[in-house]
Length: 126
Image 1 (tube, rainbow, N blue to C red):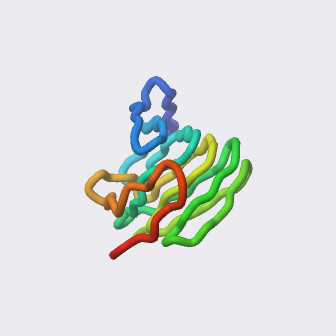
Image 2 (image 1 turned 90 degrees about the vertical axis):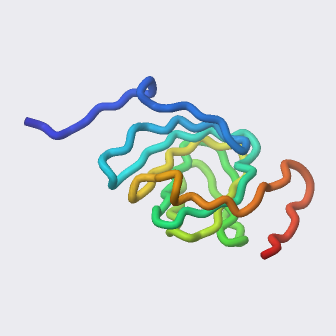
């Protein structure tokens, strides 16, 4: 008997936060989380995860990820893998798949700061 699992978009939990639309699919055990993301301007929160690696696959569009303050441009077809404890935010118009390993857990996500929606982004102050 197969151990495979099928999940549809109807099984996903839809959320809106910090400028993005998320469809969070049920975790695959404790090992893997899967999220479909649509962003039209940017994710206006800088955050990091204490334990999970975040791997984004850019399905459509282009944008810029800021990882610990360093710019990384991305476009359709790119994959960007971000280790735990890396500060993340991004801008652009993109459709993406996010895979988290281990699966994302709210208690492991740390808010760093809100990102302004227009104009120059202020430098982070510790």
